[in-house]
Amino acid sequence: MSKKVADVLWEMLAKAGVKRCYGIVGDALNPVVDALRRNGAIEFVPVRHEEYGVFAAVAEAYFTGNPVVVCGTAGPGVVHLFNGLMDARKEAAPIIAIAGDVESSIIDTSTLEELNPYKFFEAASLYTARLVNPEQARAVITTAILTAVLEKGPTVLSIPGDVASADAPDQPTDFTIAAPAVLRPSDTDLEKLVRMIDEAKTVAIFGGDGCREGRDEVVELACKLKAPVGYSFRGKQWLEHENPNAVGMTGLMGYGGAYKAIHEADLLLMLGTDFPFSEFLPGASVKKVQIDKNPKHIGRRTALDLGLVGDIKSTVSALLPAVCEKTDGEFLARQIAHTESFHKLLQHYVEKGPAIKPIRPEFLAATLSELASDDAMFFADTGTACIWLARHIYGGKNRRLFGSFSWASMANAAPNAFGCALAYPGRQCIALCGDGGFTMLGMGDLLTQIERRTPVVQVILNNEKYDFVHIEQQEAGIIPSGVEFKNPNFAKVAEAMGAKGIRIEEPEDVREGLAEALAYKDGPVVVDAVVDPLALAMPSHSPFHTVKGFTLSFAKQVLSGRLDTVIKEIGGNVGIV
Ligand SMILES: Cc1ncc(C[n+]2csc(CCOP(=O)(O)OP(=O)(O)O)c2C)c(N)n1
Ligand SMILES: [Mg+2]
Image 1: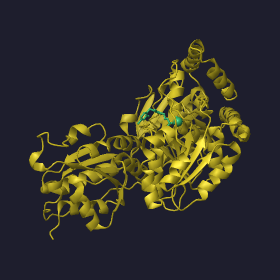
Image 2 (image 1 turned 135 degrees about the vertical axis):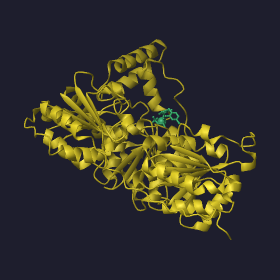
Image 3 (image 1 turned 90 degrees about the vertical axis):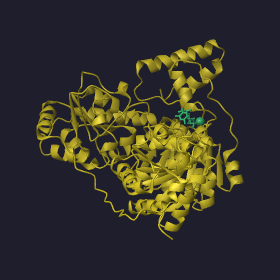
Image 4 (image 1 turned 90 degrees about the horizontal axis):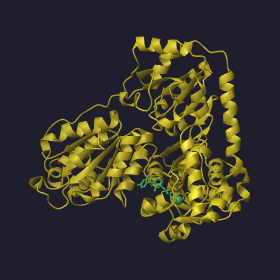
């Protein structure tokens, strides 16, 4: 049999390092999946919802650095990929989406399931190609692969079934993938930066995901400059562990002394971060320098005194021998002391946790962190799970933390954990799920985990509400509405589906229940943790409008006859605020 376009596609994708394709089959994709079967080098992972497959792929691609393929078939199947591809774009994960397309002879006739891929994927995709002629195959597949891997994000190949099953032209399909280029600022700009650092009495560093490769250099620089190091959520896992200068996070999830440190320094170095919450960054009283390999990140969150383009590892390496060592450690010591006192405050509900019912999520998360292995991978749903992950799950050198950090979609954690469980067999993959998130997407595809007996531990924060939105509404000073719902017993649902289910209602059962879940290796586990629905989470620094909003919301609730809720909520949380 002569080689088909779809055969060439998989040959090239396998050569690019693709190990898995997540998705759902159907019409246009049938010849594509048939060729995948013939190829044999790439595993097809059938899922129950295409979006679940993409979230799984995003986590796999982000951590392994290898491209991962997802697929959905013409029209509705393709549409289900979209949210996940936006996540891939924002999290910088190399994903190649194969979108089934209508027959090439009827394109642009508004036929059944027809969707214009250029228009539809515009916001998500770094490169979109419609493969309507076998002669295009080599060029567009190469571009889709190289763009995804080198520019780190999603690309889309929209393929009509008839083109996928057409004979492939006899053409070479070789390509090479370059290692990331070394990028650092010009000597003149570096000299400017050195002068600014040497002239500043105190320096603080705020780092993001761009510090992933240059973590050791950043910590070395911080030590030389006696600079406290704060970080974004995405930077936490690279900068927190084994860093004597770590002062925590700022922003809505904030903890520790990061906010104070970056506001009180003479000079702030923002390294590899596109931290979006400008209101948590200092104003003109602090001089600001930003370094990022992506020029689009420079200066868009706050006005800068100097903006430089460069990757963090090579830029900081060049900087290290050029800057003078600072000798006065008073500023750093003050910020560390503040960080330690906040940590004590954070321990409030952890220490009191064993005696508080309903279960405090702080206690649940801290116990999970304590029991999990040193190389566990943690994933948090968008929602309050992110707050508990940020504040109570300790990263550590070999642990990994991930979420929909920059796209902030709900329902990411269970599929993220599933993708990593496949990519890193034997490693604990733990999803901290919202009950809203789990029922949105995770519950259906629990069947996928069950079928494959993939040992994913999903811990559901069963608070019967969209708690994060509840907090948002309170911050905005409005009476919470549309945030409550009722849940089944998730442990029983899981058992009925064929997974292991563990329900935890009593605080004294937390440790044993979590330990049992972590020890189970024979397939997925669902821990249904009935947690306090009133566990407010305040940032370590609250901008004035936030405090005002809370007060206003409480006042409005009192006026509308909800005094009991208000008293319970204030009483339950006053220790932490
Ligand atoms: C797909 C999607 N829909 C809606 C939102 C808005 N949103 C952000 S967090 C959240 C609540 C999440 O609730 P849950 O999963 O129960 O977690 P909790 O905050 O209660 O822990 C919502 C609705 C979103 N980010 N993504
Ligand atoms: Mg919830």
